[in-house]
Length: 329
Image (cartoon, rainbow, N blue to C red; front, side, top):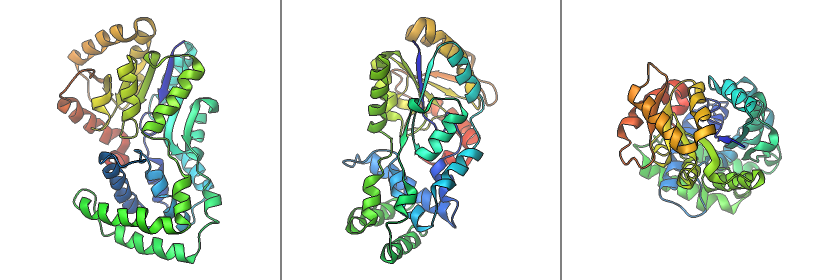
């Protein structure tokens, strides 16, 4: 049996669901960019009990404050673009007997609808449970006053240039003020599937399918995926960084920078018969040839210490493929 697992945002759909959701209220994009940067800072400092992608818990109170509903998330999923070639690649793989899975940090209302559109079985999807409509009934005027004040402070900050201010102010909000009221309940109940939780979800799938991680192909692109990519790469599987950033590339077996996912077709066919040795030979040959335009830039990354050259290519294609979402960690 051949098994493949995709991250959703990037490999299967170019938009960032949480970012698009936050845009539904005034200045929500700016609020999200700051909180997303805060997520990066917490991940990089390796804060205890914090995982990459926990942004989806951090933004939850603001979604409630601005009266967004679960139907808004579903609507975004209905309209979201799919990554070019995603449907074709999955269809080709399934026709040859592959089992296809998705492990996504995205809220369940979004992830389940996108994967349905791609014909990935619901039981093969792990994503973030998010009862937004129930959360909306929890908050009162006092909670809203704190959120209004904090949102105003956030709008005065800029990612990277104000990192120290972002860290100080949001540490105070999320870990001092917020736990004292009902807002803290919301944060505690949202457990985004990112970082180590992605690894745990993958291990559950591997156990159910009776397929060791050395036989898995994993496709990811960002900070929420690096632990899963690292785990599969070290196990001898195939961890693919697709239009990836600096948080994912160093932990991957190989990279592909391309606006079309079907460029991976030959890689998957090679993996079927020759696993990692044959795949390495193919990828290295493609790396020598090089890509063309916005397609087919391959790199063999296993045991590569210097990723500077591949990273520049990935950054360029990532900007093309993911547009606004490309600037997020």
